[in-house]
Image (tube, rainbow, N blue to C red; front, side):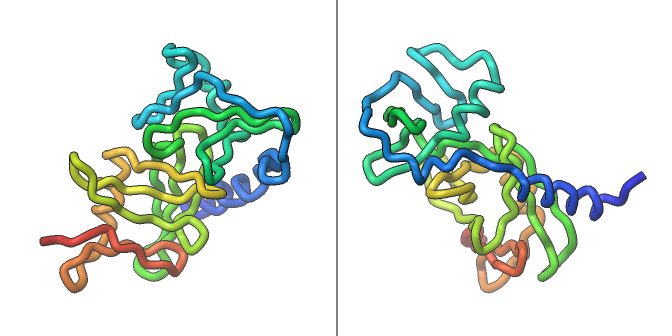
Length: 180
């Protein structure tokens, strides 16, 4: 049986090998809108009906791009604007490896992306109407809202210092907010 550290390293390697379409390089002439909405809870809707196939959501998530004027599904031939209510992804899983300064935090999204919190994938918390709204940067201006269970796991890993809750991952420290 493999050790948890070994499994964590394998996950990091697999994620590093994952190749996404080069949507940043695509600048098609044909633009428009499509009636697709990503709700605040991460559910994708087309013409008011939730997507029934998770594989289709995962596929579309690979061609999602955020530009100055909104969120778009982009192919080499067209750029279609969609509505995103909050963040386009939701972090639904958290794995921690190591402790203290050597800790690494891996977060899995509802579209099966895995990011490892650190300098490139920062964590932050915003105050919302209903309490704290924690996020992680996924890629190219696209973020994931942390689900409540993931946020609670993250809080449990934090350390209080100077009235704030901090968590460390890959050598970076993230302020999860005031403890008062």
